[in-house]
Image (cartoon, rainbow over all chains, first blue to last red; front, side, top):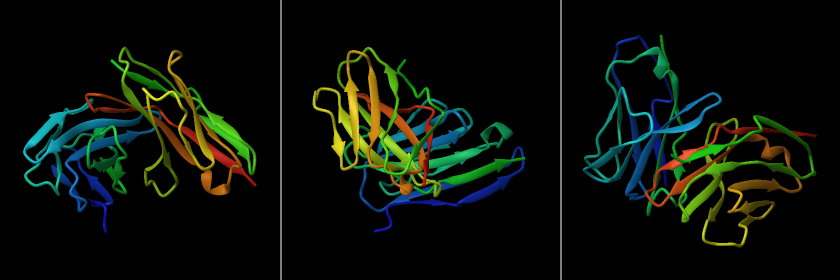
Length: 113
Length: 113
């Protein structure tokens, strides 16, 4: 059982470039979410989804897009990377809701130069 | 808006001793969920303990227990018989019925042999 798989683990971008962070889970979880982790600020919710075809904004959505075409996949797109988006990104999933145990991916460390 | 505050950026404990990590939160809701997550140097987020606000009994998981004071909006984590493997960043988190998870800033725990 792979759990939650995030790719890539590390990425360096130049300002203005776009890219997609991939997240896939094989546990048939309905709930998926993206967080960014910055020093001294904990994890902040970017976007989340409660099922295929349903997404919503979290606390810090600006500059990011998501889609949920399948239950398994929840990619996060950076439209035009900025240095302020340098962070560690985590994807997480749960079966019955965000008030249950979350299963996290191993994170993507992104640097925007 | 709900907030979660961890006032101790760093804590240190001697191996085999007991340490308590503090967490306070702000909410006007009566029904919610509280969590402690552990993030070791591997960066993997691991659920330590979960508390449902309507339950008066404090949650316990082996050497980990919480002191949940609903009126004071306090949710501290006690680690007994500390082990070297307990060294990690610990995050307190709050989730309301709407399902958005809010994290505190984190407390970095070091364990001295």
